[in-house]
Length: 115
Image (cartoon, rainbow, N blue to C red; front, side, top):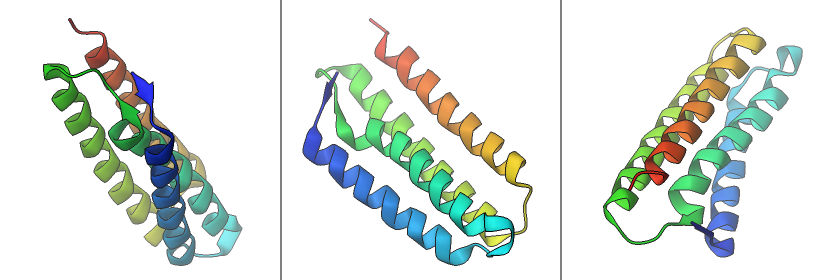
């Protein structure tokens, strides 16, 4: 597994742009727009880092890793936009998003350790 700097910067840029979009969608009550910006940027970046920014050795497991990472990226993006468009409890929002991110990390790690 190797970090590709250019692809990592691209994934960071995409996650910041999507975070700004969530910032605009979210209501300004209780700083939900700023929380949406931060959580969306961090969660999408962590999923996109696996999908785009990391290069894995060639093999069958690379396809499984990339598909899993893209599925979680799309899922986390949709859930972030749903939370930002509605009224929500901030703690529930953070817990749900971080569970998806941790699940993505766990699945990525287990798939990368397969022989």
